[in-house]
Amino acid sequence: MITDEAAIKPAKSNSAIPELSPETLQKFDVSGPRYTSYPTADRFVEAFTEESYKQTLAQRRVGGLTLPLSIYVHIPFCESLCFFCACNKIVTKHHERSAEYLRYLSREIDLHIEHLGAGQTISQLHLGGGSPTFFSDNELSELMAMIRRSFVLEANGEYSIEVDPRTVDENRLAHLASLGFNRLSFGVQDFDPEVQKAVHRIQPAEQVFSLVEAARRLKFDSVNVDLIYGLPKQTPESFTQTLNQIVELKPERIALYAYAHLPERFKPQRRIDSYELPAASAKIAMLSNAIKTFLDAGYVYVGMDHFALPTDALAIAKRQGRLHRNFQGYSTQPDCDLISLGVSAIGRVGATYSQNAKTIEEYYDLLNQGRFPVVRGLALSRDDLVRRAVIMAIMCQGALQYESIELAYMIDFKNYFASELEALKELEGSGMVVLEDTGLQVTDFGWFFVRAVAMLFDRYLQTDRNRARFSKII
View 1 (cartoon, one colour):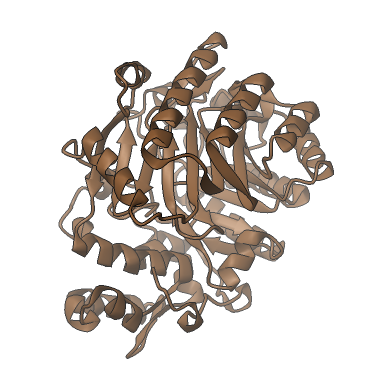
View 2: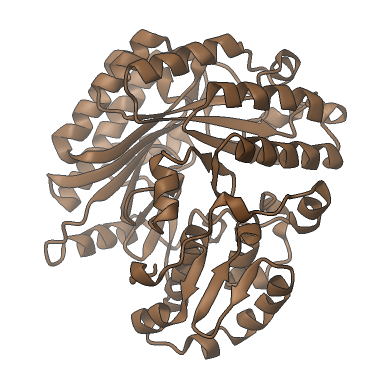
């Protein structure tokens, strides 16, 4: 990551952004990684074992390192199946299963404390899923008590939870606030009743509006809503109605995702009738209209699929060149080690990544043996570290000073990345970047396609012709 923030020129404001036509979006919207990490998770190997993870945790303790941690907890349970879902989840009505899962999370926390020591400071906590609100209020209280017994949560940290609107009311939101959560993310996807029926997720718009109003009364710092375009029975006209409702709702943050129909990989998607999916041209029209609608409503385009109000911490971090990126997406918190708990969870400690067992049976079995449930991961090479720093600077700051990379990694940037800089000239000709003798700057136009800029520095991707597994870059 760039260390000299004074040298960073953050991406410019919305005022100079050219209009993005459907034709322009279609031309540049290719498949590529989301870069929540580099190298990406598909590069993880089973040669990275539990023993590798233990060594990494031990290295963190060397010299009494006290930098804050980030914690992610994966809660896989959902009461009902959403047909579009590609997450690691367990659909069940049996809520007693969450009590058992909570016991195993406690074991995993204890293992970490054994190797890290108690009292580590936490600056960021995120509960994802599945549906974290599948847990009862008492179970959420128990989970937070376990975390607070083992770690110290900073007073100004970011503590967020993903919320299924169908599982909460104002009383439950008040309970989340009392536990210390200060940011909520509601899964909306689309307000159109026919679309909701087609994806098996019925939740009236009035329900979401009521919950957001309650969240504001309860003084949550930020509310995010997730939207998906490209779902069955969606049309540009119907999605416009949802966009207008979102503008009226005015959440602090918006995540706008493209639906990728991959039924051969994700079994729930086999229940979607492919004939009901919108054509590619319709999807592009939805995206173009969504970008225009949100910018006209005063939102800042943070990057990739994220928008935020100018007063939100995420938009402020972008303006100040303080954006960071982890497995949960863009973050306002400083770049730090990530301890991930739960089935399939992915973490990052030092120069390594690790992933837990993907099935709950294997996750339980390994913990029953007193072992970390880590089954694969990656120890980054020197080249990986150099390229990660470059890619994250591009993804987060939209700018790169060659000297900062040269000083941090003792390389000659222009020689090391000679072929990449040559390839960037084509993007410069398209107006995406400005190349200077001392660095590069992503333009306002290029910020919408920032993944395309970052991809040029991905050594693995340059030799990989199977990009179909990645989502489109917008």
